[in-house]
Figure: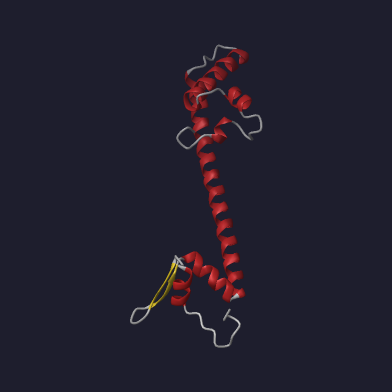
Length: 150
């Protein structure tokens, strides 16, 4: 009722008392001041200054873009390591498990069986089972593994 009057004053202490406010405290004297939860203080500062509010919005957007770039970089590093490990596995299969006397078709069968064995050991399923269980998933089974699996 008094808020429209020129004589109206609302101190932080009065606000806290009247509304039973939480997340805000006011202390008088040496080392005193008004202290609020960061969300309350940001909202109050945004209400006081449009420039500050725009700064917060821009900073939030910058941080989200930075976070997205870091996640993308992490995925890229993860995928590169996976490719290197896959190359090591496939080279080992070619060099140690497939006799040179076999035809290409026979070698392909051995290679496919070994790849399935590796996928079952690492992911609990073959690549074909992964595709059947995840028809809308992009990439192959290795794209969805963690660093230890790859």
